[in-house]
Amino acid sequence: MEKILVIGAAGQIGSELTLALRKIYGNENVFATDIKDAPKDVKKSGPFQLLDVMDDKRLIHFVIRYKISQIYLLAAVLSGNAERLPLQAWDINMRSVLNILDLAREVGIKKIFWPSSIAVFGKTTPKIDTPQLTIMEPNTVYGISKLAAERWVEYYFNKYGLDIRSIRYPGLISYKTEAGGGTTDYAVEIFYDAITTGKYECFLKPDTKLPMMFMDDAIRATTELMEADADKISIRSSYNLSGLSFDPEELSDEIKKHIPDFEIIYKPDFRQAIADSWPQSIDDSVARKDWGWKNNVDLEKMTRIMLKEIKKKLIHR
Ligand code: SER
Image 1 (cartoon, rainbow, N blue to C red):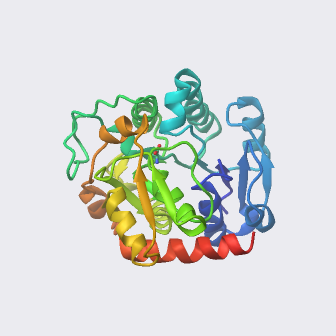
Image 2: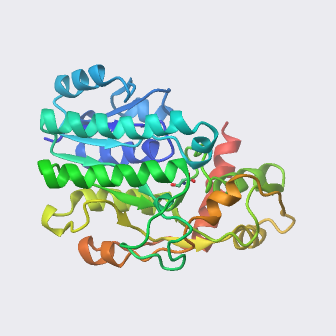
């Protein structure tokens, strides 16, 4: 029986992925951990403990004690926050990955999932249908740390045969747990403000098109990649993954179909430069070919679900 450790289980991805993994592997076999308290359903449905990925001694104890066979490392400082505290972000983003890689090699972990991001690309990368293999010159701290870690992940696979799998997530849109400190966060915040105040002040310009994905698709991509046969995985750095591509104006037009009086105003801040350095759309043909990836949720469906679920959540608060 697999024993799974999720690091960052209170975060935007972790709070949903933990529940999905518990459905597959059994509640008691998925150990949720974070440095902060997790949502109720994560704590109620299975084991949860406070654990800091930077504390390598406690981490190794934990892994041995619970006979962990797979690790999902989701803890990271996102792009906007990383620009505010560059050296701390670099330290956290790199040391967490290196801690896990080395622990995994030492203890003999069977499989690891670690997320990369569209932030590994930079201004010199082709912006439209960005290929899997292309120019990569990120100029954000977050992007540099993700690209460096991609190289390390591939290195550990080549050198030690460690089975690490990864996805370059686009901006992720979800209603359960809000993101924090990212550049694509506007596409989540906008729904809360649309429902509560009917207005949103956007920190990106109206035509800033970015690759995005609804969380259900991202979770399914993750579990499908992790369950694929190892011989199907040709990419050992990180897979390009495509879902949706839209800009703030297109998203606000979609919201207006449901809330006709919704107003958006634009006040770009330092995150505009980050967004401008990222692709507008992603070519994910390698993921499609290797392990059969296919996106399901489009902009219209995502908007409908987000508005309905956030309304429900706000009423029950
Ligand atoms: N969503 C992330 C961010 O905006 C990108 O991976 O930082």
